[in-house]
Amino acid sequence: MPVYDYRCDTTGDLFQVSHPMMVKLSTWADLCDVGGFDSGTTAADAPITKLLTTSGGLSNKPLRKAEASPCKTCGGCPERCGT
Image (cartoon, rainbow, N blue to C red):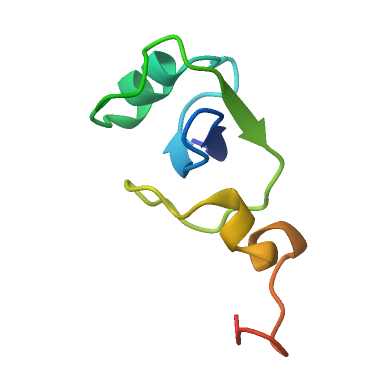
């Protein structure tokens, strides 16, 4: 199954989940159900955004805040971070 990256619009955290292409996720509750995440204190109807990425692996925990990693959006920058 394909791996997709999503950002919780409320917290800014990034998550990776694997699901069939036909599945459409739009809320925090949807993401938690598919990814097996604890919903915590975030509202179940909080919106999420599917990110356009080329993920190579699957992580079952928050990756990091979207604004904290410019390399995540550009595919890596060996000059700055060695990835």
